[in-house]
Image 1 (cartoon, rainbow, N blue to C red):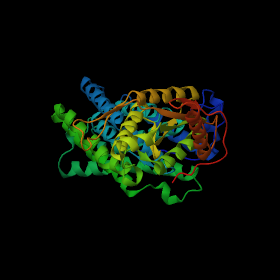
Image 2: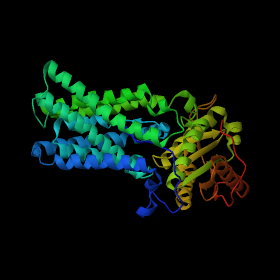
Image 3: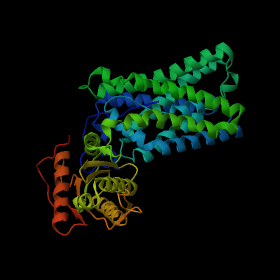
Image 4: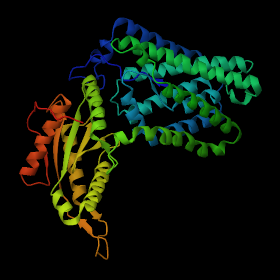
Length: 449
């Protein structure tokens, strides 16, 4: 399944929030007339298909049970992998975003009546918009993406209808032998192809400055949809003959996502070897994309600069291995105290940087103080040194935190980091172990490398 993802264009005014509550201010209206017409045609076609198939086949208690199980599986899967999906979606940047929700949608297509298939698609997209993107993705794009999947599922269902001798739903019990296999393959190709063509078309039109090949995405990403369709077939088959195996099969897509995608996102070039946090270079890439999103949605972004107080004394008195242990403990604490959608990086030495998408100044201050208090409460077990009988436990750590937010304190990433750094310096100069909010807009830039 593909999403209409990260398409550049109009930056809304500061009165717009998540496309705004006032329909007259929606970012949708900034699109060109041909694009608006195209979106409207696709969405009207999807609604028409749903309405036309409402009474096509009765909704049985069995189909309701299957629907509930698939929705539960989709929710659990996305909740477990939402941070990965968010990073991947941010990295799409003007190209299709493929993901594994098609596992549950294609399984629904093989098992459920058309209205319930549409229901699964709508709930899947609504859930991802709220939980993965925190309503910080332009709503009309998610609506369009869901409409394309409904139409793609309809195209696949038409092929399944023909290949099973006129059946409507469920299809899975009637797919057997060479004909059944061929029907499934053709239906999977239609499902992917219809969705892919519609999404790529709108990306090309709305990103005229991007090379056309970028809109096509990567071959490796395209294969994700193929894998999702295949696993969806297996889940549909199991649900018809051995439904008690579903919890076991639920592990498969999550293991695929964590096992295959997570290493890509945690490659050595993107992580800090001592703390396991993302390094400053990758943090800067993500932060730049989040600022673009914030401009487009008239949203906000907070940045925390965190420095461990008197860290040099720890290295001098306890040794560098002890210092490394403190860095790891502080990194873990910071990551535990921020939200799942926030990005924590090691800025260098004993400094850490946190990106807080969508927070207000008050929220950023609250998070910063929670981090500071948690670091103060740490008890870090240090490595045993020569002559020691038992490990030394270090208590009484302290940290200073500087805060800056977009757009209050700066509008560019370098300026935002500089504003947070100046606030951090003020915290250090005025007693340490405190949180200071930036009081001015800075023009100098800190280079991320």
